[in-house]
Image 1 (tube, one colour):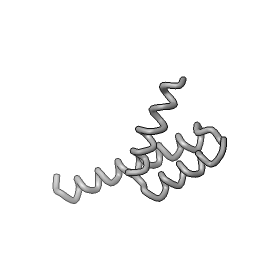
Image 2 (image 1 turned 30 degrees about the vertical axis):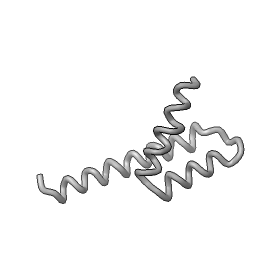
Image 3 (image 1 turned 120 degrees about the horizontal axis):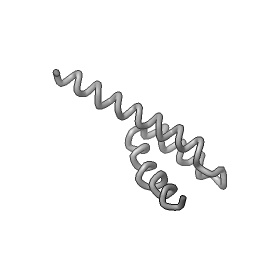
Image 4 (image 1 turned 60 degrees about the vertical axis):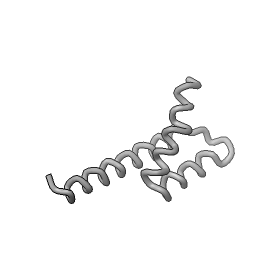
Length: 66
């Protein structure tokens, strides 16, 4: 496996994770205030980095509350 294939797989995994977190945010985040809008913009504008931030800050917190 070459370096280009490895880069492509990492980019594809980051994109898939971003889509997963975006869908999770839109479907499960409460519509109180601007939280849903802010998290959606963070995920959309910063792609995998924003998705990881959302996952560790908000997604994990929701599981602890449930």
